Length: 237
Image: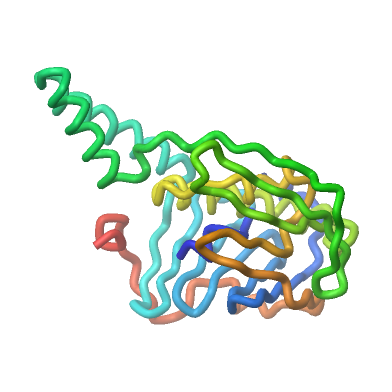
């Protein structure tokens, strides 16, 4: 799932969108068509559609899907934090500090995200015949250090509509990342100045293999037949 969280991206529904299929070396694929984005691999995918106040998480091995409201992760985090504060309120200071540390270790979404900085190295490279700029992302605790190669929208041949749809999908991915305690600036395309087409950190590496701008079959951007809808409680088990 970390691979899924490491690469995806407010949609402008009135724009005409071209179709795109992006393939990556780790086996993940991104589809963009008619204001929809599907990104994932054989295990799991996320489906985002402009104008919807939710996104869909698909688990292919279980043939299940879950609708997740935008902002759900932040709401859940606030609720869990409030419950944790209630539990800790009556404890002595020393015991409270230890218990708080243990709770945060068990719930990574409750930990504060490390501060990160992005450095443009001035170096360039080529990935899948696309020029890209090499950036270093460094966190203050060393947990999220990575090197990415970022290509501009124009370089990749993405329409403005496709790019905006991709950004909207990335916001959905950030919801999932926040729940897992693994949010990263790699998903902030505005900050990076484009789309990361190669990413490498201590957990995972991936790079773009190809982009196909042929028409994408609409059926590939639908919830597959036979999939059962589940709740977030079911999916987290």
